[in-house]
Length: 362
Image 1: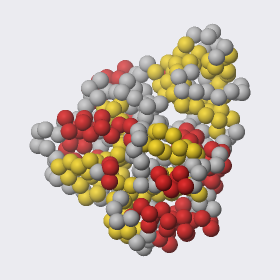
Image 2: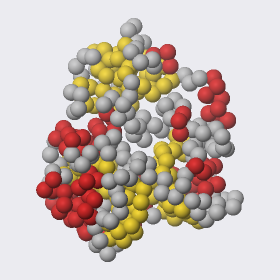
Image 3: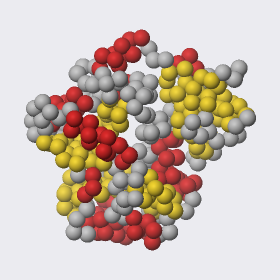
Image 4: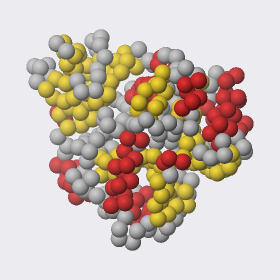
């Protein structure tokens, strides 16, 4: 298993550790509910250094991104980011990712899911042949902390002269943070609670300096380290997809409700297939649901109609700490995707009633 620059910190703090995407990661420090509420109400720190980062440079960087991703990166100005997806030849999602415009038309950073680093990199290399861009996989030397919650930026502001309190959603800034140069701070959070992500090169004790500085200013204000289990409950309450659960190589952006990041004004992999799917309508859709009966929906559970016929599958599910009830995501036949539709989750020998609801859940 790989370690992050903060692995020893997590273990010293008594975190429950487990393998995730090939890394030894903290799952929880206290309880999932307590950590969840800390982020929703105040602020918490996630170590997400396992994520992948690729730098694309030169005049061919943007054309390469445009060919491979579904969103329109030509709209990005320096200091802006966007959510996007890599698609395969059949229109399935290779990965969902973030595109950062470091320098317009010249330098971009792609942030990809940890489990997909090698797959994504190989895909980009494979398609970087005609008029190639300069590309670098900087994943192993890049550290990343996500400081999330309504009080996150106010807590961190004393550590930098950069204005992070007024950082707009899906923008970023670069400069000195906690005495470390060339730190990228973005507002592209995965919790829906506000906050920032802090990217920096792991050299010259930068990780030690930044971690210690954050907790020095944050601990008196209730800032706490948070594990990946609470990250999952937080993202699920927002209806955000998790690759490997809600998205994979067989699900298309349109089925996953990601038509808004699928721009047909440019050419990209499987554009024609997805245009046809849009014109004809999808056969299945990703929906959010809330349980009426008691129980917890889990990944892989069948979704059935009132006759017991299978109409779909649960992709994510949990007991929502904020709502105090079970919620989930799943794919169902399009006829059952309307808000208010009664569906049933098959849990062992029981069929638990649930309703299709509007997302986000909170």
